[in-house]
Image 1 (cartoon, one colour):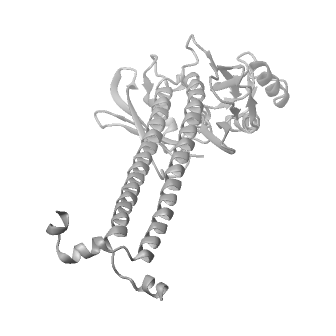
Image 2 (cartoon, rainbow over the protein chains, first blue to last red):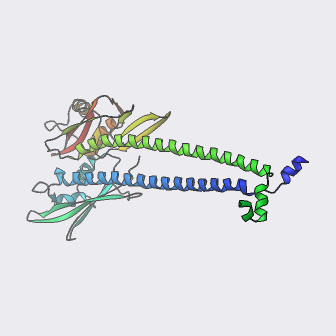
Length: 165
Length: 202
C-alpha cells in the first residue's frame, strides 16, 4: 500500500524541477563554451598554417629573385631572356630543371612574373599538376631587364599549395 | 506571512512532503549529469594540454626549419654561409631530419606526439666532407667542386642526391646543429651549372 502511494504520488513537482532547470542551463552553457573554444582553435590553427605558408612562399620568392642564373647584366635584375627560356612553353630544359632543383622535391609551387605595364607575362610551372587545395600566394616587386637598354618594374608571385605531409 | 500571499494550490505544493520517487529519480539524474559534466570538463582540460604540447613541439620544429630555410634562401655569394641551431626544449625531444622534412617527436601522457615540417630548400643531412666523398663514389671520383664538377645532367645528379636525403638521420638534441650552404657544380656539355644545397650536420 505504501509503495503504491509512493509511486502514484504526483505532487511536489516544483522542488526537483528547479534543479533540473539549473542543470540544463549549466549543460547548455558548457556546450556553448566548448563550441566557441573549438571554433576559436580551428580559426587559430588555420591562420597559423596560413602565416607559416605565407612566410615560406615569400622566402621562395626572394630566393628566386636573387638566383644568380636569372640575373641580367646587372645583379638583382631579372633577365627577360632567361625567363623566356624557362617559362611555359619551356625551351631551356636544363635551366628549368636547375631552377626547381634548389628547392626540396615536396614543394609544389608555380611562379608568375609580369611587368607592371602588362606587356610581358611569364609563368613557370614545375609540372602539369594544377593548384589544388589551400593555395597561398606571396608577391615581391622585381626589376626586369627586357633588353640591355630597357628596364621595367614588375611583380614576382609565388603560388604555393599542398603543404601538409 | 509567506503562506498567506501564495495561492492555495501552491501552498499545498510546498507543504507536501511526499513525491519521493520524483525526488529520488531527479536527484539520481542530477548526480549522473554532474559526473558527465565533470568528466567533460576534465576531458577538455586534457585536450587543451595535448594541444598545447603539440603547439610547443610545432614551434620548436619551426625554429629549426626556419634556421635551415634562412640559410637556404641566402645567395651563394653572400658572406654569411652558415649558421647554427641549438635545441632549447624543456622536455625530452627526438629530432630527425631527412632531405625532405624534419620530424620532432616526444611522449606526452603516454602518447607519442609528432610534428613534421617540410623543408623548402634542398637539404642533405651530411657534412661537407661526407657529401663530397659520397659524390666521388657515385660520379667516378668527381667531388662536384668548382675544379672537379660532376659530369652529368641535372636530373641524374638530383636522383643520386635524393638517395642520401631519403634516409632519416637522428639529431642529438644535446649538441649544436650546424647548417651551411654549399654548391655542387655540374658540367653538362660545355656548360657548368651550380646546384645549391643546404648541409645539416652535427
